[in-house]
Length: 401
Image (tube, rainbow, N blue to C red; front, side, top):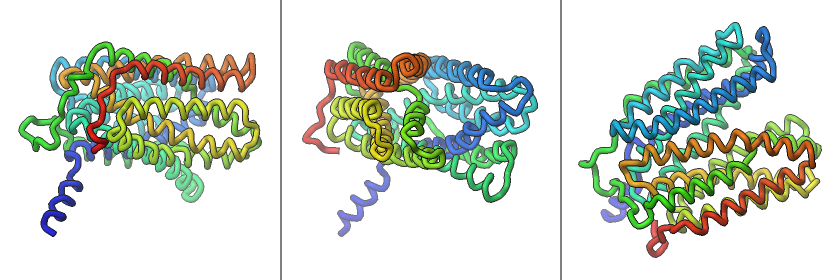
């Protein structure tokens, strides 16, 4: 009985406190962000000179700047050997400026505030992932990143739900909802003081162990190459929603599916994190890329709206499964002292690959039809899976967690 109780306590204390706190930061920050992002098109369109082109400029420049900052912050954090200041500054900056968008009276004000919001994301992302990677042993990294991604997607579900309740039941205006996003931001600010660096004197059971047998420049570069190729075929989810609409789904049901999509990402992140620790990163990456390819092929050839609904649900699970697996593998293929830089290049690769992905997909759809666009995306995912095969993965010992 005593032995059972000790085992239960150890399982309850699976991760250090910082991992859970970073997960809570992701949840409430994403909740605040998703209360603002869906309303940006409406707000920008209501301002003098605003419209689709202005919105594209705002989002394009802000996202590009965020990608660059993810790289810079990762390298910078490694050089100064401190990561928590970047996390505190990044989350703090975004939490302060985001609700101020509700007071904007001209689109340049929205642009400036949105720019600083995304810069905050760029500052925190790579150092945050590096802290998570260094806080847990190799065999638990997938689970740790799975927890962080689960809570992030939970915030993405909660944010739009709160927007719906505030506007439908409480009669809030667009500006009032954006300002109301300050409440989850305040929770973020209250959590920030609990974030601490990983200390060597901590319990050895949660200390990181470097995977020196796989942490090589060749393996890491092959992983980045696979991520880049996959990202080039991973266009905006808006195209999937457009395909559902074209298949006859009413707008309200498409919106409902979008919320369900995030819920499936939560489930996928949990499964992917645990399974990658048990089966290995390579197996999960190949499985995830292969599942993605099947989903895109289905969207290209299937015309039934009900079938596409099921396929779209599978898509959410596949993306959720890949996210913790990729992050855990980035940590495994890089030395501890360089993990900030490693995550910086990883996030930058995704950011810069995303820029042309949707442009190319949209061009292919317009010129050759949706079949060509989706099959091209599927083909790129299969090429990415082929690249992964050449990465020297670290085998799991007896399949134990």
